Length: 166
Image 1 (cartoon, helix red, strand yellow):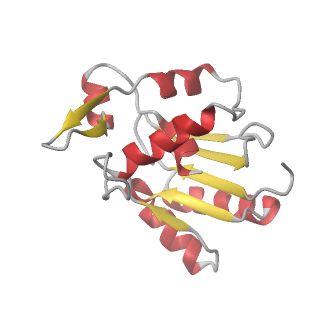
Image 2 (cartoon, rainbow, N blue to C red):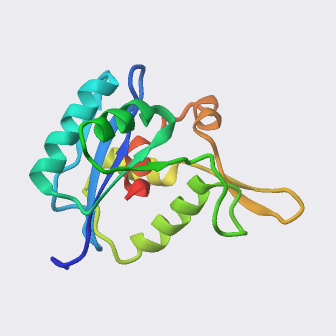
């Protein structure tokens, strides 16, 4: 759908073994615009690249994981760009989910039934690696945290989190 909104999602990592991923999605298409995967880039480098990509693609919305991305968000806003903070740990707007990350991943799961994604083994692994559990009296669904995944020997699902930001 060429008339659907173009969304840019950013999952920043800064340093360490995780990756910064910038994903694009227009309607059901998350494949046509190549995703960017960066290693060991500081917030200013990522903010400058995001600004270049915003200028190039003119997305209708830019959503950034605010966990490691607050510096990127602040810099982009200082440069005059509009972007939205995604707080994965914040409350879900849906009763059945324990937090915003779980809610977004559930929405992404539903979207995937008709969506197209890059043919990328890392993305595939990201999408199937997290486990979930039920929490509290109301049995809210909670997606496994990145720290819990690392304890199990898994890597952070950077690509899937970038897609979830879209």
